[in-house]
Amino acid sequence: IADPEAAYGCSPFAAYLDGCSVIVNHADHHHSKIAGLCDELQLTFPHVYANSYLTPPRSSAVKSHSDDRDVLVIQVLGRKNWKVYKTVPVSFPFANEQVGKEGRPPVSREVLDGGICFDGKVSLEPGHVLYMPRGFVHEASTDSDEPSFHITIAIATHDWCMSTVMTEMVRERLNECIEYRIPLSIGAGAYQGGMIDKDLESSIGNQLAGAKDVLLGITASDLERALRNKYQLHNSVANAHRCKLDSRKRKAAGDGEVVGPSAASTLSLDSSLRRSTDEERTSVQLQEGRLRGLTVREETMRSLMSVLSRMKGEDLPRSTVRNLRNFYEIDPADQQDLVCEFTLLCFARCCVELGGLAVVHMNE
Image 1 (spheres, rainbow, N blue to C red):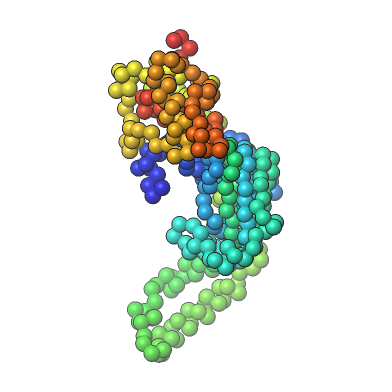
Image 2 (image 1 turned 90 degrees about the vertical axis):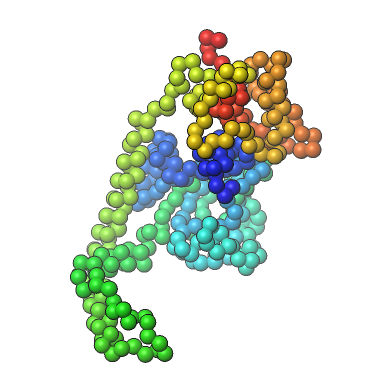
């Protein structure tokens, strides 16, 4: 999807319903249990953070790629199959050396044809953990009729290596000297034929000699102190976000609201639904950018549209979200039912948000 915001109006439920994976970066800033896990891991590692990935049945979140950090993959729900390639395109890559990501070079044929670790794919089930070293090309997919949810614990080792820390320290110390802040002569780099002005060459040589002295003056204690400060900064920023989680409360729906985004946000699998009235449908005010209509994954479209058709009929006045699966038709051409419980919840939330269905309150 080139523009998810335009397609789904920032609704992860609408995106999942259309077959997209839902990725939450820095999930430890949004969920208290994930935040607690990261806090515990930081008793061992200097700093970690978490991303989460929810992938629909028979789908994948991202294509084959490498990362600039070490990762622990924790499978929480469902099963996911992983392929890890033996050939490493760049050992211990930095961000600009990753492959297979947007704006980066694709994974080469040499890597894809170079064999797979573990003699095939690895299937992770709930409770399994996979360690993915920095730089190894990998891909993952679901092949069953249930979704997959996993958490990746990122250990940003590219930020802890000697190259990174030394570069930062040398730059910091050079920036303390006014002569290293002054731009080089306009002739530097502009000469032709391999010749350089003697005066310019002498000036640059003197600055390089001074920079060498700065480099030689850095001690092991300086490096240790710089790393400690870096860890403390990352942890303090993360802690500021994680500490706010306990004070967050889900926004409650307004009194009597049965359609629209606010009513949809209260839905669970046990919520009851009914068909909406014409007045309720026309009262819905959509968020900017949200299109009035469902975008449904092709493999589940027939089943879900049959649910909506029956819910709007006279024979099925109401149903819980969980029990909607009792009222749809499975496409006979499909060997598996890809409408999982989360698909039903996404479908229900989108229908209520758009005004196609209404929430049944306790007093109805």
